[in-house]
Image (cartoon, rainbow, N blue to C red; front, side, top):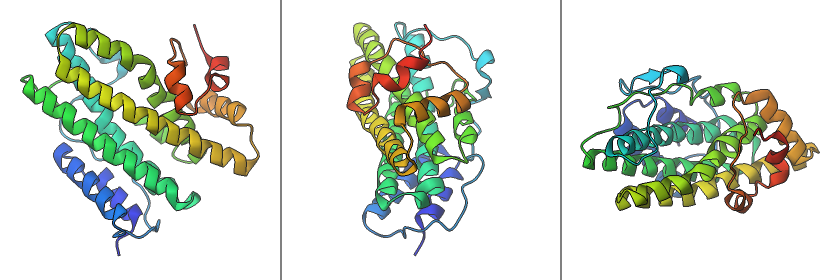
Length: 264
């Protein structure tokens, strides 16, 4: 029987976006049906395979995009979000395949379900781009999204602290205003997609918070203080307001974690 680690590695090494989505969904179904062994017998790659497009640029070279009010600005915004979701497929399956042996089986359950969600998110965003006359890959994209994974590849607690509890939590902060702007521009279809993603991301951040708490309880660490130490060591960006405190709290990420690191 194929192992879950081997299945995760196969997803990471699949570069074509449509093929990655298909494989991610098939892997999640196979896992739910008991068709993959809870075994971690292969290593995850240092980096996932990349499609030929989009062109990946350093953050300093990325063109500035609008806030989603104009048609061009909405395309740029939706493309950027599609790229985040595409990268998030790899992040979720990498977490399951790389760190699953350190946790109960439920850890794999959670992150494989996250990977399936991210594949769905990417697929609906790409479909929306095509409906608007564009496609994923038509614009350049941020090259730094895998940096957080590479910086935390050695430490499950650091990965959970940075990826779901910083990067995905930031999405909870900014999405409600983004939805409001897109609604105001009359693009109700795109706004509906982002509302669905927002709801799912609360659950994803919650998985990160819960498993981070599990590690802290087993290691005898104070969760908030340990999170702050790991974020300071491994996250190169800023923890900055405004914060969506209510959504973060629903996900188990309370102000005692992030308020001491906030930069105004």
